[in-house]
Image 1 (cartoon, each protein chain N blue to C red):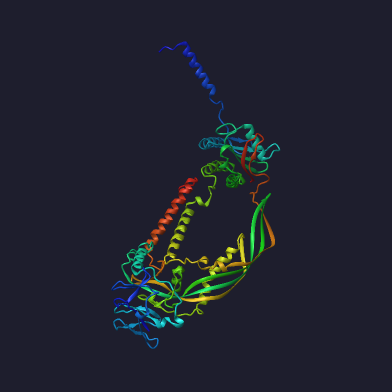
Image 2 (cartoon, one colour):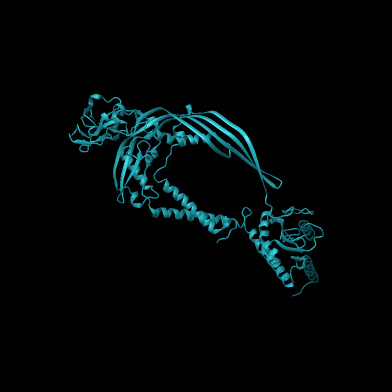
Amino acid sequence: MRISKKGLISILFLILFSFLTIPVSAEEQYIYDEADLFNADEQEELEKLAKQYSEENELSFLVLTENDLGGRDVVQYTEDFYDENAPGYDKKHGNTVILTIDMNKSEVYLSGFGDKQKYLSDSRLDEIREKITPYLSADNFLEATKQFFSEVPVYLGVNPIISPDSIFLKTWFQLLLAVLIGAVIVGAMIFNMGGRVTVKHETYVDPKNSRVVNRKDVYLRKTVSKTKIQKNNSSGNGGGGVTSGGHSHTGSRGGF
Amino acid sequence: MLVHYKCPSCGSDMAFDSETGHLSCDSCGREEHVDTYDDIYIERSFEEDEAKEYQCENCGAVVLTDKDTTATSCSFCGAGVVLADRLSGDLAPVKVIPFTISKEEAMEAFRKWCKNGRLTPKGFMTADRVKGITGMYVPFWMYDLDNDVEVKATATKVNTYTRGEYRYTETHYYRVERDIDVSYLKVPVDASEKLDDTLMDKLEPYHYEELKAFKTPYLAGYLAEKYNYTDKELFGRVKDKIKTFIDSYISSTITGYSSVDYHQKNIRTTQRNSYYVLLPVWMVYYDFDKQEHTFAMNGQTGKIVGKPPLSYQKAAIWFASIAGGSFVVLKTIALLLGGDLI
């Protein structure tokens, strides 16, 4: 087979061009362990897990650990990190969930960026954070991170209107409710077998001679009680916000 | 006193026909309007006291009645007879609602009702063991009652709002007072000691447009009873009966509150009127499983009451299907929301 000179050049060009379009993003980093919480093996294991979870869920799973936030708040730090590093599974500044551990103040911050924020609302992140806090308190950062990785997909799989921990999703509760419904309906059927009393006030009332003669509604007093809205041992602004770069996000913050 | 309604044409005994509302003769088919039936065809026989034996004027047989019966049929010749002396003076009913459902219609309706029994045993549904069906005029007292009601209550309105980190609950208290006049017309209470009160209460309502001035011919061919209790004796029962009506009326006048706490509810009931009336009831006696079940049917509207036997097997099937169906629905919703299968 003979190839013309012109054809050869165009093939070469095509090969060169295709090299250029392949993303130069070398191995993507998921674990930024500035506080040295993980040893090399653990770091490698977590990187692998993070990559796997990120691809399965179309959402980047990042873990930031830090001893010194440079005078910044853990929320501010996370926001700045997102602005500067522009992570995201689908695009830069894309779908990302970040676990930030501040060793200095013993604080943890979970945040969700991108399209999946409704699945990772403040309250849902609160629930995840409460599940991993015991591991953090026990200084078991490896297990805490693994729990974080495995919990997030559970929440992504459940409609935002209901918590995955909701009793309505438990089979035993569904069974109990079904049995109750059956018992109430059949019970009412048995009760009404012999006929029901169907007369009421309207049946025999004489409307011409029935009326309210005197009606008084006197305001007496008012009592006010207040309860503090529970903000799960958060310090300051706990929820989400908007980064200086203009990216909105959800979040949950707490100590451990 | 025993009264026969004789046919002006052939001399047979006439009986009240629920379909036409007239007296009709079984032999020749002649019909006579209750209001225009000529008294000369009424045959009367007098007895001295409240004897329990009457002699049928038709066949001469002895009609045995118990002391409360006011109308019956001769057990030998079937002629409808009315015991008029038990329907006069203090015992004279003021009004009557005639039967509009005939014996055949009643039987048919009862069969249909049995067939629809969702929880009754299969053998019961065929309604082939009906021992007897009796059309009976049951004595009722109807009361016209005026009620003077005084209510004092404390009611609250609650609203909640959040300011900053606090949730505030504001409760406003109100003193609520109501003076209410409420009247009820023709509240019926059955006056026969033989019949179960709760059964009779369930038979209501009767339509009062058909309430007719009492005439003895309406009773011909049916059983009828006289009252065992006077209107004074049953006043307590009618007061109990309207209490639930009054309560629902009171709460309908106190609206817009989150909670109402009654301190005082004074109800003064005065009786404006009472009437002695006879209301039509078909009594159905049904032998099933060596037990007799009694049902009552409103002789005007066809409403049937009475406790039928319960099939545990059917109840179990209903329960299983409803509970099972509910579980499938709940599980499906859970799965759609992203829940787990198990």
